[in-house]
Length: 149
Image 1 (cartoon, rainbow, N blue to C red):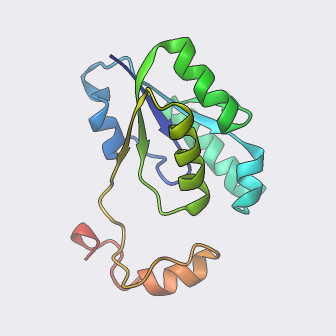
Image 2: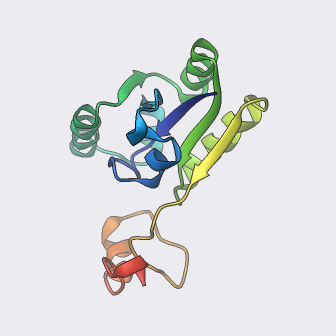
């Protein structure tokens, strides 16, 4: 069974549970990939400084970076590598969730597992992802406490 870890900007660390799910530390041949989709960056207002940070982090992690549309690249990688399962870190980002759903439907014969992470913060309402400052004003009360509580 060949796995593929599909990373996004909300899970740029080797300690994310998606790597445990892929048995990465035990010598799994699972390769983490990131798809550098400029349309996605534009939809999410990810500026050049953030893109630079994402790139440097991915290089340090040893992830493969593929430039192009997620809708084109991911199916091509799955077919070329004989992937039977795609592991994706969970995210609250509606743009990423929409793309994830579309690609999952297009690759209906492949297993997709969304892997949850320990919450950074616990919010009483859905997060406002428009600006970090608005999010942080609500999240800082519970941030970095054990289990986000």
